Image (cartoon, rainbow, N blue to C red; front, side, top):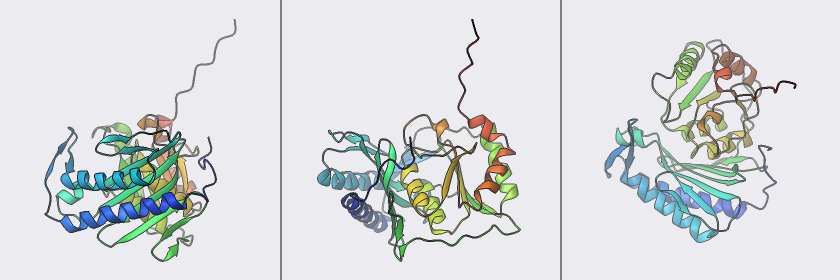
Amino acid sequence: MSPNPRPSADLDPECRTAVAAAEAAGALLRSRFPDGFAARPKGGSGDVVTDLDLLAERLVVDRIREDFPHDRILAEETGAAAAGDGGSRTWLVDPLDGSNNVVIGLPVYVVGIALCVDALPVVGVVHEPLTGRTWSAVHGAGTHGPAGRLTPAPRPAGPAGPLLAWTQGHAVRRDDPTARTLRHTLELRSRRLLQLWAPLAAWAMLARGDIDGFVGYRAEAIDLPAGALLAREAGVTLRHLDGRDFPASFTGPDTDRSFVAARPELLPRLLDLVATTGAATASAPALSPTPRPR
């Protein structure tokens, strides 16, 4: 399937709804940060959930359901919040990407919303509550921010190496050998390797041209499509670790969600770097055995 599922010049209403919902959720989050909330553990991996996550999620889901009552909605905290007869259309809602940062008072968090058709993103919105900035992308129409369409100029990485961001999924164990090798190599060969605990913030930085590349290992599904669309529509190329095209689908196993994202002039360098770690081979799909002739 193509990473661009269909022309989407008709998706302006969906984009407007996503922007309005994200900004309303952002106003709520901003009004309660840094200490107007409660938090509790989420799962056994050290993750957390706050009451802000739940309040913001309800706000976003209600806004989408009001405007598009027949669409399916998949939300970070409550799962399938609504399911209608919208066919192949699914909204993904990450109401507070960066909950762990919020809990320790670190002001790095965003709201993310995507609309996917046939599991691939056609609308993506990321809103940064503390600055009030919003970035949105519609398939085929580019990525836009407060100053208009994003058109970052090409730039080669400096002699100290590229400035990269890193993310890995919650299911990845701390002693996962592939993740450890990949992350260690990137740290050694880059100028900086940012680990923001908020992947959508990193995607927005990549779309703006603030960083050179983004590498993910078994990334989470809920926030991937919105960020990937922002980056792709801003001129970023996305690949699996082995160089195959990366469609940024939210379906399938997390082993299908390892990626390298960078501008075209820097992508070969990053893919070569990943190849030296063996991570590309480890994440490649298993091939069916060739049947023996009878």
